[in-house]
Image (cartoon, rainbow, N blue to C red; front, side, top):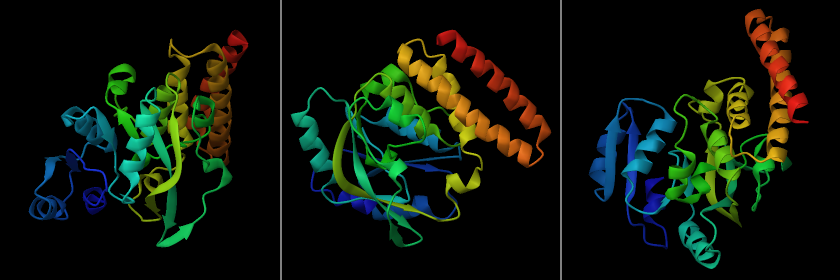
Length: 261
């Protein structure tokens, strides 16, 4: 990942690496091989905290993320900066990506298609922006807040909902990152029932006072859909307590739906 940053055709002002509690020699490896990197070690606090620490340490106005299991293609940053210089009203830009699963290139499904513009409703079903693909102006975080450190997964889904409810997104239709998956330490493999965390994010958005009326209605409807999926899963696996809890949340969501419609 770091080599793909150093190899960019556009000069990178600063490289910040947050080592979130690794114990495999990563810290010493980076320190000895990449002296230009600003390296911070901390006990394991999760991906949201690591990103938030990096954002706060960054001196640049524009920030790009890169997860440790992804890599940038050489012209990634240059192509995005050129486009942002043309479209000066935008404060966030993302790109398309190459998917590699277990060392094999695969084609993303239609539901993972990328979009630009006012894409809030496109973000409701699932995460459609890859953190490793974005360049974002730092002042957006002053406006919408940082990554939610209470979410062990789907923190990016939660962030894009907050951003896309207020900002238009610039999409560069080029595959400029390699996104790797299939390995056992992926968070998406560690946590089952990802809709559980998407539902939390959706419920937060329903309470967002800045959300447009039509977007609030769409958010409530998507939350109802996610809650139904979870309810069916809990019933199927005989998780009675969880099923009862989600039934109560579903009742509240339906009452909200009636209120706003």
